[in-house]
Image 1: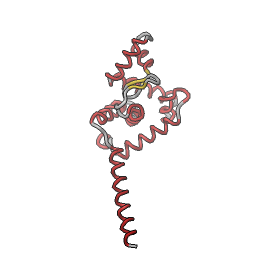
Image 2: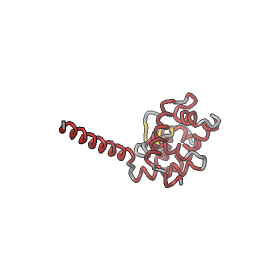
Image 3: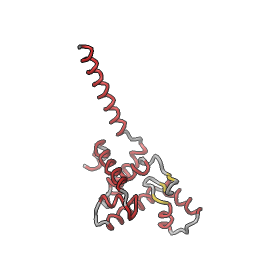
Image 4: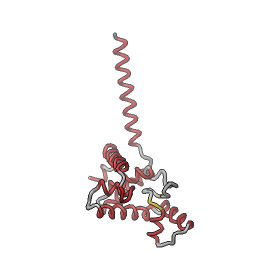
Length: 170
């Protein structure tokens, strides 16, 4: 009987220890991720979309860890499609200009942030302020993307749970 109680207590302690470590690791950010987090938040604040910009950066690039997607193709912290960047730059749609625009989205965070925020604001206006539709359209266009919305909502919960913006929001 004593052995089973001791085993149960030890198991609980070990489980709590692993849970604490899992939560701590979930909330760990590298210095470069913190930089992207703070930049995203402060850049989006002017349109009351700071938290959204951070959550999108988490979903799209893991706060700057993965800056290229060949599927779309998209690049940068907010994984903007390269054709959108080419349009914004006023360049012709050529393979070379696509490469240049993709590189600019990676190298110039202000350029990428301006397109990401402009896109979110456009969708917010289109959807009359409906945040979920705005976020869904950021990723899915006119069709939206409910799975993406769930991911962004989960990211917002993580941001709040980990307290990443507490010093900035007060």
